[in-house]
Image (cartoon, rainbow, N blue to C red; front, side, top):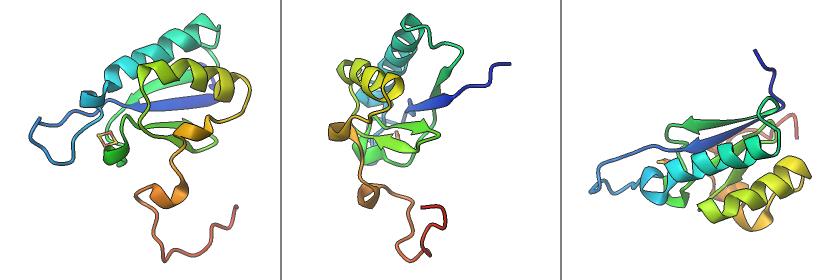
Length: 120
Ligand code: FES
């Protein structure tokens, strides 16, 4: 089993068309996931960086949502056309694509009353 250096989780969650939360499947999530796979494999990163289709990442309003670990960089409104830039800039050169990063204050799931992160 490979010990990957990074994981790229791409939301491909699907909801009914009339669901008010919407979903990343309707925002090309599956195509975005396939493009990550294509781009990463074409660069010989297949055994180093793993693209994973994910269920809802709880950033539905900002889909297609993508998160890269271990850095924990969250991307929103990712389109197929953005994937090559994320792979080149972030994955290959270590520089996240700022224009697509979801700022911490816009992420759901962060408790505003939580104590400070001891690791930051
Ligand atoms: S449906 Fe993609 S983040 Fe919720």
